[in-house]
Image 1 (cartoon, rainbow, N blue to C red):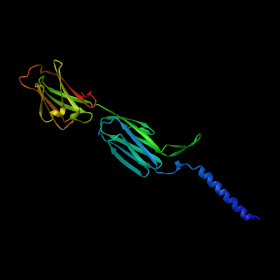
Image 2 (cartoon, helix red, strand yellow):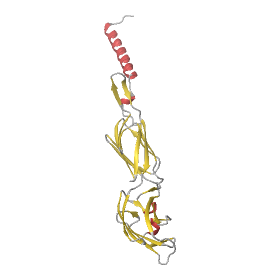
Image 3 (cartoon, helix red, strand yellow):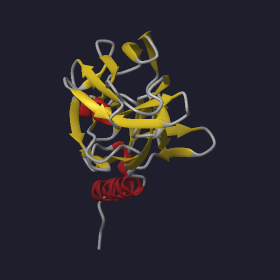
Image 4 (cartoon, helix red, strand yellow):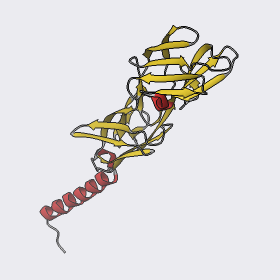
Length: 245
């Protein structure tokens, strides 16, 4: 069979195209392409049951914010790229982050499925399924008070508190000069005179949150027996069991 030079050139060119295409395909790196298969999962521990937490994730042409009271939160179907996020939860917690993130405080930056070059390792592909753990620690608010009155009746002003807390989470204890302690929950005395062991009445005025506007009046009930002289007051945050002030 006689092979013309022009036909030979076409065959050789076609073969080179096939070889070149195969070589390019063999070097194909999925990390270069936006597949929408990336995922960031946040897992939290330490928040009290029912407490909401919120995360906002932003990227190129992407913004989403989610709120939940579950132990996890997932942002799926993300294209390759760099995303920043910010975390918010109820006041009264500290938080630490762990995982594949460049984190600072209640925020961070993650790289989802992106590819970078390295002089000694070639292409480095970051995982497209990222997990970030958030560990919350419940704190005790600090309280400063001013106590005005005599040993048998006192008007207590709450001068300052690091953040407002529910009265239902604060126990109020009266210690008399005999060292005996009498404790009530502050919510039980909200806007009414609440008797304490037949010795005193306690009245709390203000809202259902302990704040700088809260006032507490303690009065001795007339004709009481025993030591009704007050020595000191204790405020306890029931969620942590620690003394506030």
